[in-house]
Image (cartoon, rainbow, N blue to C red; front, side, top):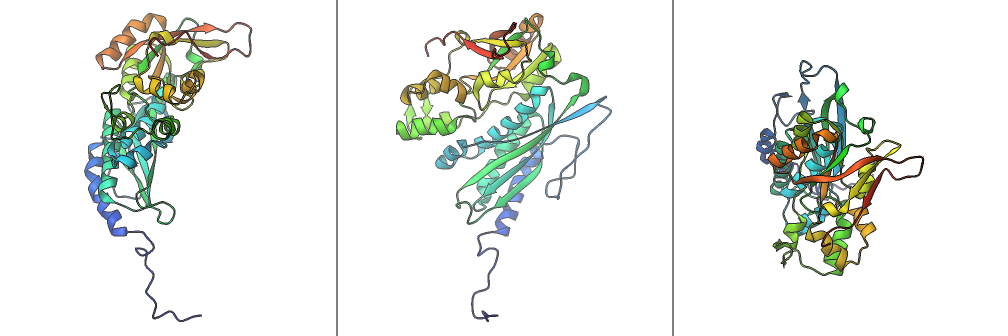
Amino acid sequence: MTDNSDSPHATYAAAGVNIEAGEEAVEQLKPFAEKAMRPEVLGGIGGFAGLFKLKLDRWREPILAASTDGVGTKIAVAQALDVHDTVGLDLVAMVVDDLVVCGAEPVFLQDYIAVGAVVPERIAALVKGISDGCVQAGCALLGGETAEHPGLMTDGAYDLSATGIGVVEADSVLGPERVRPGDVVIAMGSTGLHSNGFSLARHVLLEIGRMPLEGHVEEFGRTLGEEMLEPTRIYAKDCLAVVAEAEVRTFAHITGGGMAANVARVIPPGLRAVLDRGTWTPAPVFSMIAQRGRVDRAEMERTFNMGVGMVAVVAPEDVDRTLAVLTARHVPAWVLGEITPTGDDPDAPRAELTGDHPRF
């Protein structure tokens, strides 16, 4: 064995992992985790596992629902602008709004943050956004993990993911089996791009269009960066409020794959959702992407939410009540379409967009 006694001693810090910075980051994020709390949480942040006491007296036959997701390449915009709290909100939205589709109440979430190098202030900004999102969703932030990956990621790079857990009564699980002919489809407006399609959006607006993120865009009334970083709307509490007041058959979270593909996932064989484009006008960001990138309508609708972030299928007698609940909660909502039989055609699509958008 070669004697390397005169060589510098190798350390974890020299290899790129700063344990002290990680500990400082934990101290900075504790107040945010404490803000996103529920009474069922046991202990505090910093343990090896988060503890959550499921109060069985609240549920007769509880079913656990789980969802894992990330934010995708929207993170590249956050990193370019050095604005990091908004993608934390996006992360929560992507997870909890998948949970509520089956009627589950999100009860806790755990995050995973991978970084090239721990910068405590940046981690704190990310967790602040996650904490704010959990407060909006009514769930606890039950800890998580920050992993430093020197040599694999550059110092300024990071990625996010999270897993959320929800609870729903066994006899209250929403889904395709509840959908009936004549049911009405209600749209809930998005806040813009949300967290899907950013690879195409960045390609068109930043590469083809050469638009600066810091530049003011008249159609948006703000900078391009502010428009792109607008947080995803968190619908969880709004959906649960509708469930409490109306006969909801199911929800569909409009994310990757667009409206038709996601609505089709919650429609049973023999039925289809007929959705009318004429009931809404997509926000200017969508028309700008379509025009500047010469993106055809089919590709736009496969990639983006086009202005609808969540869809509810409700009993026809509860349409007015559903719209009233959402309006009271300041969620833009309107009748989008209806559920009809497909007849004898086994290849009929389970969701179909018809008509044209006004002024798009």
